[in-house]
Length: 366
Image (cartoon, rainbow, N blue to C red; front, side):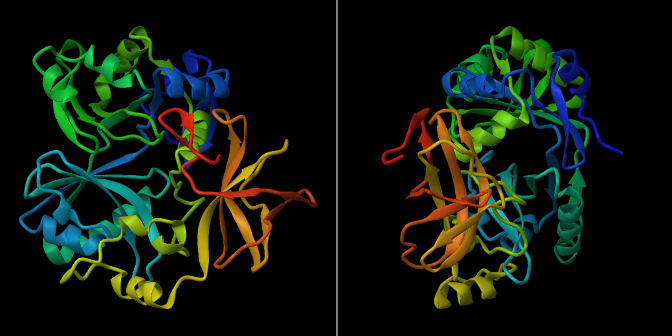
């Protein structure tokens, strides 16, 4: 059975084209995917991300548990509401999932994990939590709406209770706080996102989700589907689980070394393997590619380099750039002239440092 978010009927009433996404019936677009993409880059767009899984962790040893579970260090989280991005690894150093963890109290942390990995994530977290006597509680009663773009924060702030506005306006990036929305609805507002734009990801009780969506639409926020979300995050240089990394890939090979904290005295799952890989040097690296001529770079295409073959991971037309871009995993070393096999034709591409787009504009050299 395909699962539906509480906003499913709302999407259909808007004429959304629905697709199966990790077992969920989700909107790919509401008409023009390109227009939705530009709305987020230039103004404000909103995404139903209620398929994401919210997991609350409670217990006296919750911090110890997360120090063991995650490759990044939760010891960086000292202020209430502060958030951290991390990979959760298996014993071989492969990526089970990438997630965000919020510090809501010494005995209360919140995780937001990917939809498609929900079952395996929950099983893994519950298994690891037993030794630390941490309670693992999934929160299916919550919905989640991401509001993203240069005007996103202002539009959300206008809907909050006037008492909460100054506090939420001051909220730093990768921080979250509770606030009251329209008609006093309780919101968990996080200054995070997956588009490269500023904005909020808002967790809201499911019974208020439709009212919040409608209030955002009335404030001039454009509904956007998963198609635009994908091109936005690719332009912004953000990995997608299952496409750019999985259990067969270590964070070093997914250009996520910055999320690994090899802090002293912390024995997290997969650490030994990661340290050995770092010492030996990885055999594959993740790079950015730009196709300057007409054509589209797609997942699974073969990449030809001086050191052997690689493959396209995430690839798409990038509306902000008006050309195709991609992440690729290729053999380590000087790659020479790189080509991509597009339907049997070897097409030259440029190796670039990503992100491809920052603050709504192409990055230097793109």
